[in-house]
Amino acid sequence: MPVTSSIQLLRREEVDTAKWDACLAKSSNGLIYGYHYYLDVMADNWHALVRGDYEAVMPLPWRRKWGFRYLYQPAFCQQGGVFSTASTGDTGLFLEQAALAFPFAEIHLNAETAGSGGRQRNNFILDLSVSYAHRYKQYKNDLLQNLKKAGRYELRYSPSGNFGEVCRLYRDLYAHRLRLDRHDWTKLLSLCKVLDAKQQLIVRQVIHGGQSVCSCVLLNDGRRLYLLVSATTEAGRKMAANHFLLDQVISEFQQQPLWLDFEGSDLPGIAHFYGNFGAVNRPYFFCGWNRLPFPFRLLKPAYRS
Image (tube, rainbow, N blue to C red; front, top):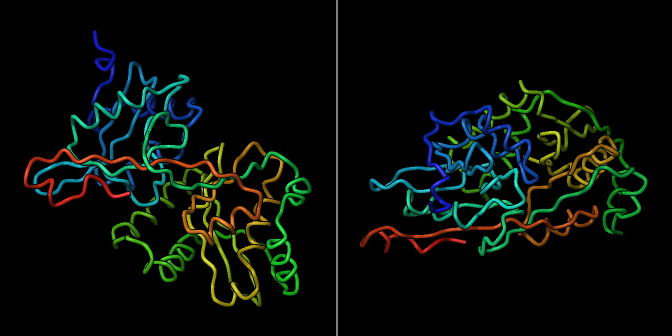
């Protein structure tokens, strides 16, 4: 019997969500993006590949165009791919099965996906299990100078329950750089509501003169704090409030069994900024294929990296 025969293609309504989420929780590479409730909000549609009794799973977010279903990466879902409770998820077999069901794909595979062969994309993460004092010693001089600059102002680090305000500021500041439509922004707010109800949402802000000048939304799955969105006003940038905000997040969650996941970036300036905190790069992978019939395959590249 071929090994691939143990991998089933399931429609969303056929997925046992309890077993699915249990696989994510037990997987060494489990990420919040793979949980069913995250996909239900952010993906237009999704099917699933499941090996055995949910020993390994792969979400398949999809859309339809020209009558063809194709795989895509939903907004605010940085990584997908295979999540497995075993040491290997047989990524190649899963991708073969996915390609049989979907003739076109542009997706991201997670950092621990073996043999993906796709283009690497940066993702910086920081170990929070150590003390703040230890972490501070790893800070680069550029960061230390900016924290010194922030210290000249009366900045106050504070919790906030207003994730909507943070998301709207993020949209207003950065929408022109991002390929997102209005549905993606609506889904972002819906996602925050779902995760807030599950107590997996953390909102923090920096206050100056009674006004919020920098804020962020973090997700907590018990393993990682994901920096989902972060927004800094023009006044906040002049005060290095974003450096101060992340420094305070690190201080707040020090010595906890968590990684701070900065969610990027390939942009040199942002990569340098995250590296200043001592973060290490754990790249994930772009994966794509084009098996559309002629002439449709001419309308799309083999894949866009």
